[in-house]
Length: 96
Image (cartoon, rainbow, N blue to C red; front, top):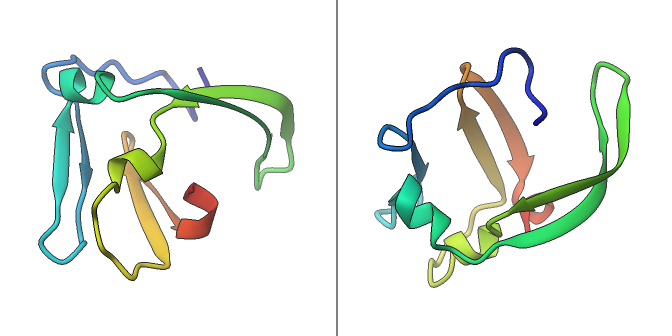
């Protein structure tokens, strides 16, 4: 696991994943609901702003295309909020 500090310990019954800000088309999933989605595997390099790289990294997860299926939007960027109060602003084309 790759984290910027201790790996967060979140109980599955307290975990959620939410997409909002889509003009009334907000969506939220529990741990159990999220685990039911199909998973994809990708292999890519990671380059950090602190000047390190991790090459040929395998990631597995749910595609943003799956989560946004059937949602009409004109968004160009997404802001991700995560445990530890980290945020990042990402061009949507980099998420798909």
